[in-house]
Length: 340
Image (cartoon, rainbow, N blue to C red; front, side, top):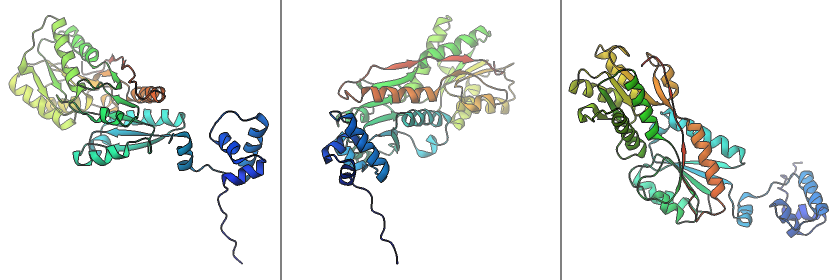
């Protein structure tokens, strides 16, 4: 004789076992007040005895919380899973959410054709808040999400006048540190491989390079400026272009470590010694920085700290989603290795 399948305990069964009304049991389960200590203890014992697990959908209707946070990244899956910055930031976000007993949903928003479906999903019926990474240009997504009544925090200072909270590293300060270091090393023709112009990190690090030159009474030579897309291949191509334009350059500041790794390969191919002929500084202090040949001097930032700070800001602003929190800047410092 086969036994009937065991049914999931209901809220009514919990209330009956505890000897309280359904409303009292519901208040205990959903963290409500106005429940006596005796009734709370009885309900908690009944939950343990019956193995009751609250229905997430029903609980969300009562508490108006899903305990889920969406991380939306405006890049391709290939780039997200191939670059250490994203891995570190996601790790920091995931750890912080786990500590806060929240779930993480990862979404990609690069393709414009998928933006409509994405915006329909990002509502209070599905998530409690949204974290955004790697926005380009004057992306309207943060403001559109906030219009749904959801709190939003952006990783990286948004361009334009978007009134959203953000966490960023001080890109300008970091680039200034890099240039000042190269000047102190006696370098005269300092080039840069800048990041994408449509990203704040790219434009801010270029700004820091220009301001670093000005602080050393150096004038900007446009021939010493090349651009990449933060990928290693683009750094290699940009370095070759710089060498063609200014063969006697003696230093280069790269806007991230992957492009610096590409630049080192191009310099090796061109027969330039590092740092004797050309000194190289990157930005990020990614794991690759310690394994390049030679090991890379770089500006340190912590993607994990950024991810944690984003979650902290989002959870703090969840009670007043209509008010955007103030932005937060994380400091940087220089890690000197063999390339300088």
